[in-house]
Length: 147
Image (tube, rainbow, N blue to C red; front, top):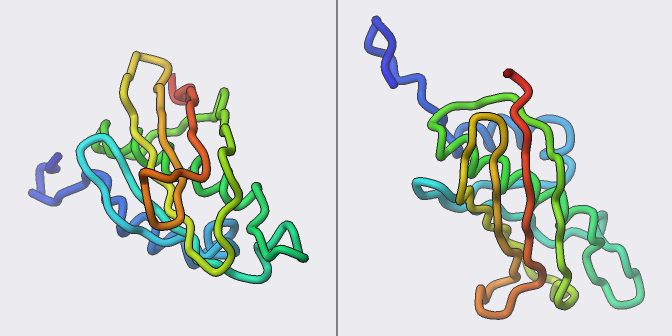
């Protein structure tokens, strides 16, 4: 979208993550941009000792993976709409299939597959290098707060 001054004001996922990564929760997780398409986004968190949930095995905690998926899903909605829009996570379900491999980054992919006037529907997955061997599957709904 362009304004009357011919300035592009569409949503830029890479810039959003780079700005977000230096602040608050995204910065603590080390969230980074990977890629995006018309209705999906991929973000990653690198393996870090501060994110370990099972000290003996060195496995990442589920919380950082959930936060990664929530942000990847949210971004897929903004990408599909081509703009940032206030929203609240109504429901986000992660089905964990296996633990993340210690030492490997986790990549989260969120896809917005349906938009209504007030709700967005997403699906996605997290993996640590092979999308055919996911760590978790995600499904969720987000409500727009600017109605």
